[in-house]
Amino acid sequence: MNKEKHTVLYISHGAGPLPVLGDEGHTEMVDNLKLLAREIPRPSAILVVSAHWEETVPTVTTSKRPELYYDYYGFPAESYELQYPAPGEPDLARSVREALADKGFKTGTEDERGLDHGVFIPLTIMFPEADIPCVQLSLIKGLDPAAHVAMGEALAGLDYDNLLIIGSGFSFHNMRAFFAQDTDETRSRNEGFEQWLIETCSAPDLDYEERKKRLVDWESAPHARYCHPREEHLLPLHVCCGATGKASTEYYRLNIIGKRSSAYRW
Image (cartoon, rainbow, N blue to C red; front, side, top):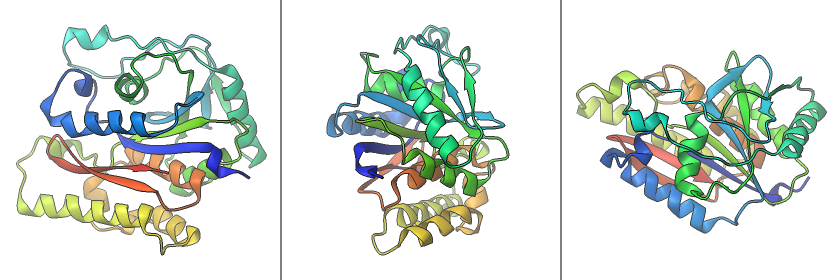
């Protein structure tokens, strides 16, 4: 199994469409995505695991011309006129299903659902020409962390050269906290979990089995449930770690709308 043929990123994608609307709270995030796009090899295709899609079994988009799914509410009218006309890639979708099936996963296909904002917002920033084929892969309902690590391990076997796999989530995702007064205590909780996450993903002295155990038991991390009352924005990271089987080569500390966040590259 050649895991080196895939570039893998876990990104924090921010709040709805705000990153592409010039919101100052997303400046570091936008700069980071542009940096990543410059530094990685230009991919032949992109597979995105977004926090915003859950199905009973791992499900892939199969449309040759996927539309967009504006899965956010209460933003300016221009937010619902954004376009990202990247082509789909049915051959990649088929390869994803085959790789998952080889590891015992049942899978599904989706021809009508559009790419959600966890896909088209970061890709608009990274690859604005929208000329790289893109496929989206769902999370699994129930949000079992071990299942998502295993899904990543299955993707490591994908027979597709020069593929970019993106886990699109947010390493801090307590929505109430974004609208509450920040205090020394809340900052300490945020930073404590971030430090644990960076160590888990990047420490070279952790072997894969220990890293995997930490991710599966992520709720025991410092202030885990404060940072993730619901874990859908964290689990794309589990997929990425499973897909690589090693420590991240780079991590990026970010401030996104006033909260400590992070991104990872393998």
